Length: 286
Length: 99
Image (cartoon, rainbow over all chains, first blue to last red; front, side, top):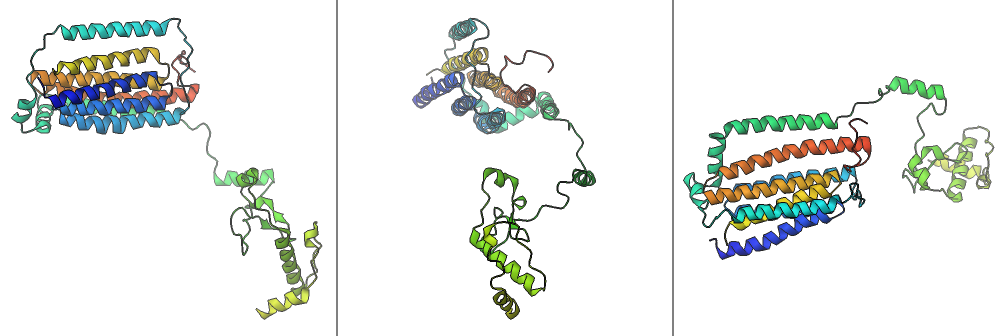
């Protein structure tokens, strides 16, 4: 008989393990199933350690709950977290038959174990001590008696890795266009041959959502990222800013001896040409 | 407590996993049920190792874990590629050999 502590541990962990397994089967969402299965695997890992298989317990935690369950969760995220099972039965009465068959199989298994007359057990402690611990004992067996199986396992793992890469590989459906082809296409379409203008840089706003200004002072919408434009997050420049820009432009034109361009539209440019002397003085004083 | 109780637990978990494989339709959950069955086998093997007092059962459980890891890699790759062509992870939708 085992110790009382192990009995308590077993009954607690058995409930956790069976509850996790039932939760995995009964949960409709794949994520919940994966988390329930992770709980079951952790409970089983503690069971392994209680049975003297310390190395397997650690491997169970690292490989199963650490690697395999995370792989499952990755695939669940890839396929879609919200992908719930359909409740529709494709085969009539299949679920009832499956549950009945499962109960029958469980009864048969348990009856077989109960008939086996396993009254006493040897315990793995002596086998562990013979090689100086659990890990040295396993290592001795793996690299002597089971070395051929170990080699085949390596081949299996490599095959699985290559197989996964082959299965998930996707051929490119179209040839990627080179820079020259892209440039020729731009010229042929004739929409925008030059690079797009940069967004505006002002004293108060230099973020990408502020549009740059055209020479006549109107904001150039094309300078703002199309995503921001579609979301309606383009910063609207106030009429105040536009008026000051217009003044600066007209002052510069006067200073350079050009004719003041007629503003395209908008009342915001109505102050153009009001104080050219002041602007000129400011520019000259710099 | 007799260690045979671990065997009962293992057979119970194996049964739950088998019923899950038959009942569920989502391919990922199906795979999880197979993993549960493999884990139940591992528990039985570790318990056998304890009953007999040698480490061979633990070695076989170790190899089972390796094979399970390889199986999961290939199986999930198949699920992902089927999902790409079918846009569904349900095993009922995969009823043709080709697209």
